[in-house]
Length: 335
Image 1 (cartoon, one colour):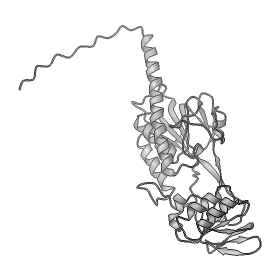
Image 2 (tube, helix red, strand yellow):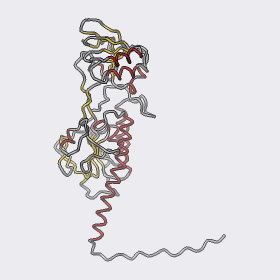
Image 3 (cartoon, helix red, strand yellow):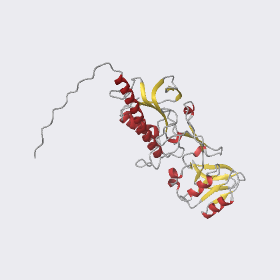
Image 4 (cartoon, rainbow, N blue to C red):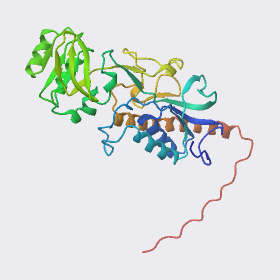
C-alpha cells in the first residue's frame, strides 16, 4: 500500500477516489502516473496475473527492451506510489452503478471514474507441447519475439485463419518457414503466395509439438512424420477480460470488442478501457501510450466537473463577495 496522504488533492469527497484503475500493467500504471502527477486521488487494483508472464523478456519498448515482464510493473508501482497512488493487490469482483468497486476480500472503493486495464487471456489450442512452451519458444507476436528466433527453422501452426499471413510475415526473420495446414483449407491464391516466398506447406493434422530437454525440437504430424523446428508460432484465441464492463452498459463494435474513442473513453459515463481489453493488437509500449492518453482525458473530464460544481456552489453562497485589494501600480521603468 502506498502513502495515502491526500492533502491538496482535487477530490470532492475524502472517501471517494477520483479514479479507480482495474489492472496494473503498462496501460493501467501509465494512466495512474499521469493522474497521480495531476494530484488526483487514484487507486490501482491488480491481481498480479499479466498476460506476458510466461515470457522471459519483453521487447519493442524503447529504453526497456529485454526487460523482464514482471520488472516493468514493479518499477511502475514504485513510481506511482511516489505520487500517492494507492495500490491494492487483489481482484475486483464487481463494479456497482455509481462506481462502487467491490474487491475480492469484501471491501469496496468508491470512485468518480473507472479505468478498465484488465487485458486479455490467450486460449491455446489443445495440442501437446504448446502450453508447456508458451511464451518461450512457442510464440505469437513476431515483433515481440521474432528477432530472438531469427534464422531458426520456424513452424507456423494452422490453427487460425490468420496463419497464412503469419507465415508470410515470419519469412522476414527466417529463410526456413513451414506452414502446417492442420485445420486450414488453403486456396490457390494462398498457395501461390506461400510458394513465392519459399514457404513449405506441411499437409495433415498436427499431433504434437515435440519438446525435449526443455526446448522445442520439432512438430509431429498425426501420420508420424516429424519436422525438426526450433520455434513454433501460432495465433491464440484472444479473449478480452471485459466481464466487468458488461454490467456498465458499454457498447461493443462489430467484432464484439468494447468501443472506445482515441482516449479510451467508452460509451458509458465515466468508464475508460485501455490496453488489450479494448485493443488486442496493442504491444506493451502501445498500451502504455493508451494509458497515458486516458490519464490526460480523465483529468480534463474531472476538471470540467470540478469547475461546474464550484460554479454551482459559488452561485448559492450567501456570503458577500470579498473585496480583493488591488496591487499598487508599478513605477515606470526608465532606460
